[in-house]
Length: 171
Image (cartoon, rainbow, N blue to C red; front, top):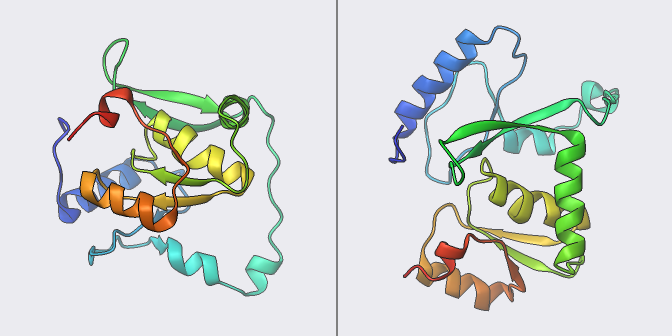
């Protein structure tokens, strides 16, 4: 969409088209922004899945997949070429998360500020997967706001932040 913001209605239209084009998709989890009211028919609100406690949840058995099995497609903004989706396996995801934790000396006492989109490799690996892997606290901003970031760093005693170099100097 050319890097522009889209309305919730536009997003849901795109999501409907994708769901209809991918008949093998069995579940759609909806992550709501704080102010979003729109819904997607046939989706499940993610927040409600976190508090669910029923027979199906108690009977759930995870499906164990090989480490080289594809896990997700992460967006690349095209640093070394055109923007594209990049396939990541369980192995590449875990190696990036664990390697980042080790390289930067993170631990469970860390409080991480996460601003980059989680669908982008830096946001996913450095802002989400690494901190989740070690059980750190994550403070999430839905979009960059310098003043709000400063407030959150002070209020929540943020001790780490995964960011693109150009973001760090942005005003």
